[in-house]
Length: 65
Image 1 (cartoon, rainbow, N blue to C red):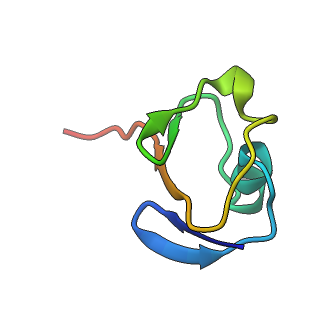
Image 2 (cartoon, rainbow, N blue to C red; image 1 turned 90 degrees about the vertical axis):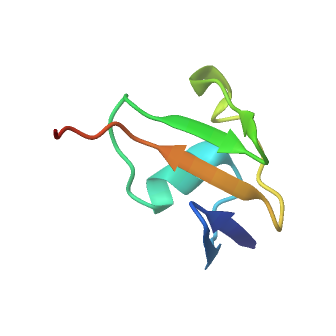
């Protein structure tokens, strides 16, 4: 399936949001995810299906200054 993650088009095997995060090796508790401009609560990640053409934004905090 082809989706866009943080502005980059990718071919992914995952069929749900939690699977995508694992496939892309995102780890940790501090992140927010939106699909097609709708924030998805963490509790719904395992049940949130992905569809061909979805626009996904994964936001993680960064330190710096």
